[in-house]
Amino acid sequence: MAHVDAFEMERYQSLYWHLVDYDLSESGVTPLTIRELLGPDADAEFFLQQALGYPLSEGSYETRANIAQWYPECAPENVTLMNGGSEANLLALWSLLGPRDRLAFMLPNYCQGLGLGPFFGDGVDTFKLKPRDGRWSLDLEGLDRAAGKRTSVIMLCNPNNPTGAVLTDAEMQAVIDVATRAGAWIVADEIYRGAELETDVASPTFWGRYDKVIVTSGLSKAFAMPGLRVGWAVAPEDAIAKIWTRHDYTTLTPGIVGDRIAGITMRPDVRETVLGRTRSIVRANLPRLEGWIEAHPSFRYVRPVAGAIAYVGYDLPVRSPALVERIRTEQSVLLVPGAMFGLKKGIRFGFGYDIEYTMKGLARVDDTLADVSSTATHGA
Image (cartoon, rainbow, N blue to C red; front, side, top):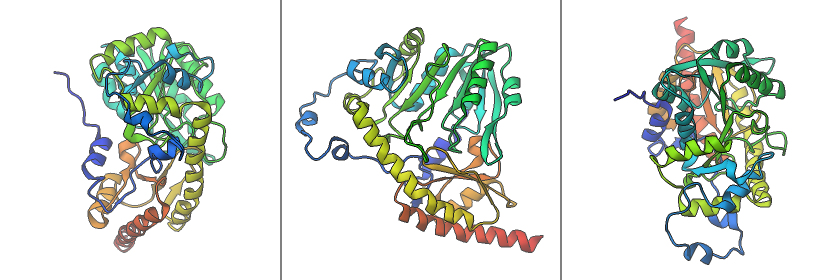
C-alpha cells in the first residue's frame, strides 16, 4: 500500500481545537446561522419538509448555475459539488496526476497538495511566495525551476493561506506562461476569494484565463459556513467528467441540505450580502490584531490582502512547532506554526471570530513570548 504522510496541520488542529480555552487557529469568520442566511421572514418549512434523500452526484442544476455566475464565461456544466474544498483539491489532483507526473506546489500554502503529490504522482517541486517591498511576491525564477518536463500540475492558493496575499495580474500571467510552456494544468485553490480587506470586488480568479485550469473553492471560508462541508470544482467539461468518476469512489454526492443552502447562498444578491458580512468582520477585527502585533519588536509582519488570517514571522531562538506547542500547553491557546505551511519561524493567527475573545487569547500568548524573549536575552 502506498504511504501517505500525515497532514500535520489538520491533525494538530483536530486533536486540540476543542480542548483549549482559546482557539486562534481557525482560519474563517464567525459562522452564519441558517436564520441569518435566510432572514427573519424565511419559511422554515422549506427545510422541515426537505426529504433527506440523495441529491444529484454533481449537485443540483440550480446550485451549479448560481455558482457558475461567480466565474466569467462559466456554465453549470463546468461546476461539480463535493464535500468541502479539501475533497475538491483531492479529486482534482487524483484526476490530473499519474505515476510519473510531478506537482509544482506553491509555498507557503495549505499543504494538502504537498502530501498528495507523492501519493498520486511521482513527487513535488516547490516554488515560493517571498516577502518583498511590503507584500508577498511570487518568486518567478523559483516557479520556472519547479515546472519541468514531467510537471503535469501547478497548484497554488490565491488568496493565499497563511499570508492573505493575492497575486497580481502579472504574477497570474507568469503562472499561466510557465504552465503553457510545461503543458501543465493549474489547480487554483480560491477558497478565500471574497474576503477582501480593502475592496468590495472579489480577488481575480484563474478561471477564464487559461484552458487547462481547475478552480477549487467552497463555502467554508469567505462564506462562513464550514459546517456545511460544501465545496466545488470549476473546470472544463472533460476534467469535470474525470473528477466525477473519482467522486464515485469517495463521498458519491454532496449532502442534500448543503446543496440546497449553497443554491440559495450563491444567488448573486445573497452572495454579495454574505461576502459583505465577512468583509465587515475582517475589516473591523484586523486593526485590533495589528495593534497587538506592533507591540512586539521581534515580529515581522506583512498585512494580508484577503482572508481572516495573518502570518507573523519572528526573531526568537525557537522553532515554530516548539513555540506553538509551548503556547498550547502553558496558555491553553491554539495557534498554527509556520512550519506547517512550509515556512520557518512564524505563526498564523486567525482573527475572524469574536475579537474580544481573540484579544484575551493573545494576552495569554504574551506571557509565553515574554518568557522566551527574556530567556533569549539573558542567555545571550
